[in-house]
Image (tube, rainbow, N blue to C red):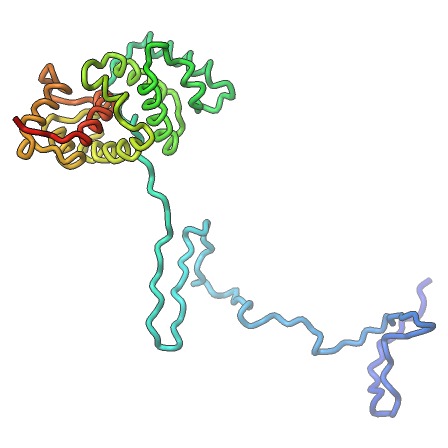
Length: 283
């Protein structure tokens, strides 16, 4: 059986001279809070006007899916002074991949590629599709000279900053290693002459120039484009240094081919760098 329902009192105590009940009672230094609901308008939580949203506003802008889509308005200039110029974010430029497009022109039989794939899978112990340099280095043979090995390490480091060192990169670096071992004369000697610590910037610069000239991303440059590469990248022109220029062409293109492949270009970079530190005397 339910007890009687007590109606909520609406008596205004102040008008009849009785103090308004205090919801807090203190007995023997203990504080008790009365369950009496003393509503006060000033304690009501109000929603600020700026947080209110009109549900009927169909023109409200949709929420962006990522922070990159948020347009931040410029700050309001209330003091009529010159606005502070915006400073561009120091975003690092993407490092070019020296081994890019080289797969299009290297000669790799199906049997050789299968063998390299098996080697790649065996070296990739964590199966993440990326090889670390110590894993790659295990495939270098004893006839690879110290300067040549340091150069291959630099190429690996540059490539790894722009992409995973996957199967394609592994195949191209293997073919580059073979090409370097085939070099003779000044192109071979250059690996022991140049500073492999500072050559990284030159590789990046010449790779960017090569990719700019290779507009079709074919992995080859015409000899006319090679002339432009030598002129823009190394300041070696047939007009300024006719004899030196002809010597370079004879060294890098002894068979008078129409194009220079990306693999040959990478193999010749130490040779190009070695020429920049030598005073080019014309006979």
